[in-house]
Image (cartoon, rainbow, N blue to C red; front, top):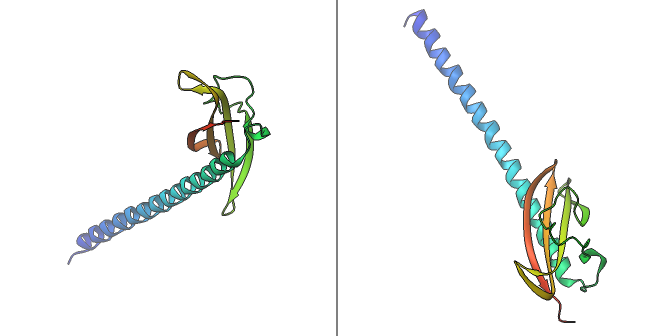
Length: 133
């Protein structure tokens, strides 16, 4: 084996190790991202259950009188923080009264919940709730 062959073999080995290292970093980042999404879905389910249990006149279900802001994350109707596994998330939700799609349905509240981490929405869900009071 000549010196050039040994140098080529070492270069191939180094390139392979760099690729493996980068792949490991990518897997670690994807793992963290999936953890954040799981946390966000957990937070959303907690808030959805809370909204189901609240009376329809609860302050948390108050609409800001703008029925066109369901997707608004810059000025939401309500905002809170939630901590899961040492990660703090911003929870925002908007409430729209008496509307299901384009139809008017009295006693209906449509709530859209957003979970934000590092200024990025990582999960959201809409739910409808009907009051028969």
